[in-house]
Image (cartoon, rainbow, N blue to C red):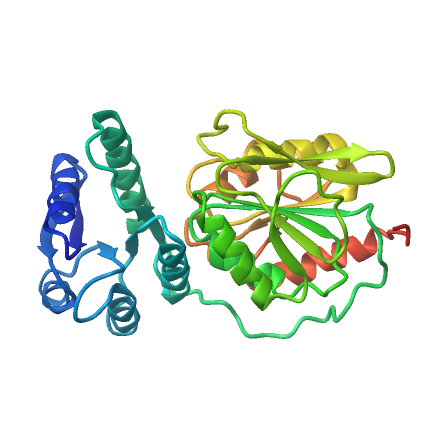
Length: 348
């Protein structure tokens, strides 16, 4: 059965473009194109789409309000169509908190090659959304780790994610105490969005979260998020670890790539590192996690039940790269328990 898609956007041009993309894909079928939330509501009730593409900025009722109401009344996988602005990034992150599966930037018009690439990517995201798991919100819970029993720079945590990862990462690191080991994060996200995402995480976490600049000495109590157009790597610098940014080509189809980050942790930190692979479409990070595992790192994968998309962790598990497979709500304590059992010293 083709995937039923509803397009919701107040721009007639964008509705036309997205409708054409959906219509040309044999695996998809267009059930409607709504110009506002009121028409969209009727179409959702009538056609019961499998996936909705939803504009954030619409007249009368904006996309966020429509999403919030719909996810309570008739939960449906949603791919947000966002503007590449700071305001658009903030609204998109809010949409992901409300239950949207993924997001895409507004299409850039006038470049045939760019439009072909855009069409292929949005079809991929719609297909993934149709097979996603909804309804696993961030848990309000306590962790047993009010603080770590040691403070040192020799242990590192690497976290990688893609689709569904913004909320999963938040769920994990919100429960890290302020003296947790340095954490490096690669989340598939475009430039600009990572800046906003880092600020949002920083406002919610005990640890300090920042977008990586390159050259930083990795310190306890800090998390470093890969910027949306660079790979992050870790290298040894004497007794310290430092973070470097790599402007090389995409790896595993992504930049930042989780594989690049994990491979550098395997090479330079080995058994002093913990690798964590969360929800995501595709296979980025699977080979890198396997490499970490083979170099003595303890590695974790998020389980299928709590993943929005059980793609990247599934491949890593099949490759034998996971020391443990855990539900999302158990990961933070499992990671910190592992680090404490590794018996780090107190060198700064």
